[in-house]
Image 1 (cartoon, rainbow, N blue to C red):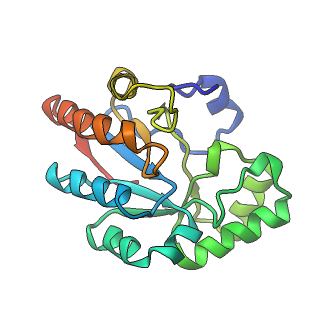
Image 2 (cartoon, rainbow, N blue to C red):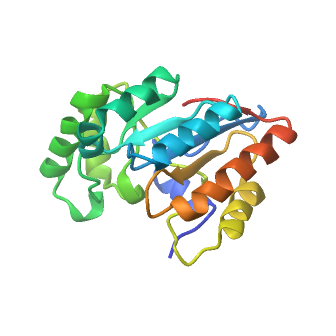
Length: 205
């Protein structure tokens, strides 16, 4: 069970997290979780390049160590990099000490002031500790979830999830993962074409 549009209640409960950007500007913030990996991340980078778009990639540390050449391409292509823990840990089910150590292990590779908790699951105690040790850290959530990870979802519905819910200042989540690829490969270029036609710009976080 997941919600395509992040509810106001969650935003109220976690006010220190970033859920969207300014609603006054016709700008969309594309984000990609769980890479970098061969084939899928390369597809995303090629697609973004064809539309002259920049995005933010929340990378798993373990994948960075396995595929350093793709990680380097992310940076060379001018995209922003975020920390997504080293082993994709779910904060709600992980002791704070282990969670912070896993974050820091990934941080050694990313050196980023952006962090997205895997699954969007993080305890308030973990937020507090991260902010203490990294005062400049921005914890990035989203207001539109594409659902591309949902293998029961059609590519067309994934596309509709995005264009039907995103608007000015939206932070949209896609996944550069094998699990998401069947939907991503259809929905991403279609959504980019749609938003470009509507006059949107794409910025990094």
